Length: 506
Image (cartoon, rainbow, N blue to C red; front, side, top):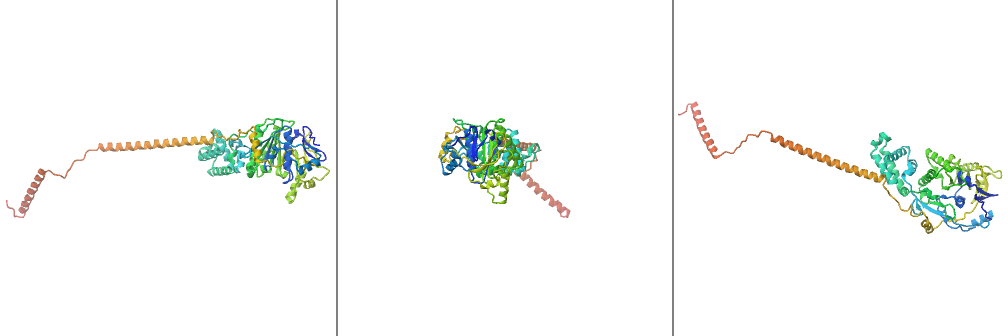
């Protein structure tokens, strides 16, 4: 008969029921296993149990099959077999309070954050920048902060990057070298991110994560489901977004100490994407967030195919493990199988490595922390069936849930307040106006100089002595006198010539 123990999470049934102590849930957990072995069912059972005890939940839905949690479950032959084999008797079906979110705003409330909230470190990883490019991106953020330029969306960052590139010489001595090649590489990366839908993710109103911590009228925790089917097509964007949310939760929530139950349960599906090709600095940041966020009352559950998908520094923070079946077809698979088996506290009743290959769908090896925080011996167990629907919910029903949500209208309309893009446009317009005014001033001064030079030239000409006037034109009297003089001169000349040769007659 189905009799859940009060204030405990009934997860599975082996030789005895397996319960998870709520006070130990914030020691984080891992759900691992090959494709098709039942990880999603385990995730749903845990999420429903958290909700039932008043713990709000966040789930990343990468396949769309978590949407059924808003509907009553229905019996199938697989569920009936589980009910009968576990002796659950009158197993109740019920729906859960669900709110849908979607980065692309199609199948849920839009999810946005600002460029400033994301920060240069996470954004550099999102843009897949190298160390030099990441350094210049940090400079761009610093210059924006120092000049009061808000970075809210992608157009703000593009405008800021262009501005810093155009004024690189001016900033070189204060902030360091900024090459045009590096600026160009960042701009290209921003264009690529925009092509992947990044412009929808950055902007306002930005997501208030405190909206996730809410309850329905019966005191059950609200399930916040992020639609990730489209987002998952861009793995780097998906992983960075999930890490941003963890980081924001850590900064948002106050220190809580040891609680009777978590404030929020956070389920991160396809968790291996968070650590794939991640630089060392980012891994250190992830390890720090995972280690410290439990003091804020957040229970983080990673879902992946292999335990080895997570780095050791993160695995060391995990106290609760549900390992579904693994397949060992290759030498590397066999190595991962042995590593998974060694991660459990051994049970003398069976060989853990052999059991991992033999367990079927819906079964798992389970080890959880007891009330004193000690890992239990691994047990072979069947995972309980979920109370809500297993299949996907049609878009019409999802749309009705969205419209009935108390958050509807808060995030649907995008805002675009004055930020770096508009401020730099105004600065550019002012600089252009100043340049045009300066050009007009220089043109006026040049014209004045030309006029002064022309006036001085004319003045210099007016001060020169007037030239003597000569004319080739003669009056009639002058012509008569000149003609007579010419005649007398010619006659006198003839007589002188004859005299000289002895022929003169006076």
